[in-house]
Length: 128
Image (cartoon, rainbow, N blue to C red; front, side, top):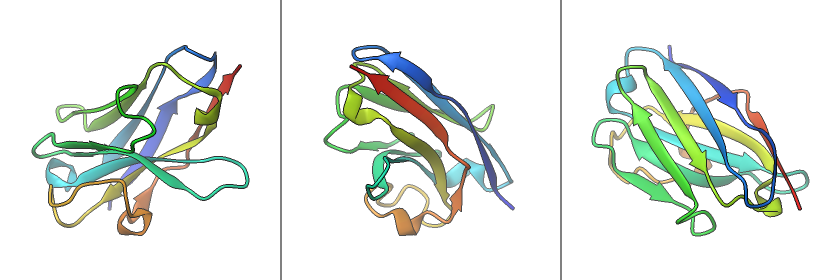
């Protein structure tokens, strides 16, 4: 069974940086697709970034390209999202999720329904 627990997040002023991370337990970590998603109040959940744990291939939403970096530490079974140049519109609950099939194939944060295991979320608030 795969379980996910997020950490990090918090509050920062616009232009600042935050890092969120998730710890993944379960024997399938070595070759899965991990994603970060976010949901702001009154809005649909949207994909932010994804990484294939086996190959390290990454994918980003256009809204965060050049500002956010997703990475993985396979020794620690963790996936992190470094967020720089934060904007008030980045304010949301951030969720880490795992897609347990397909390995690195089309590992993108496009389809939230492809990700079957989710963490509880961690809040990121950016003030102007």
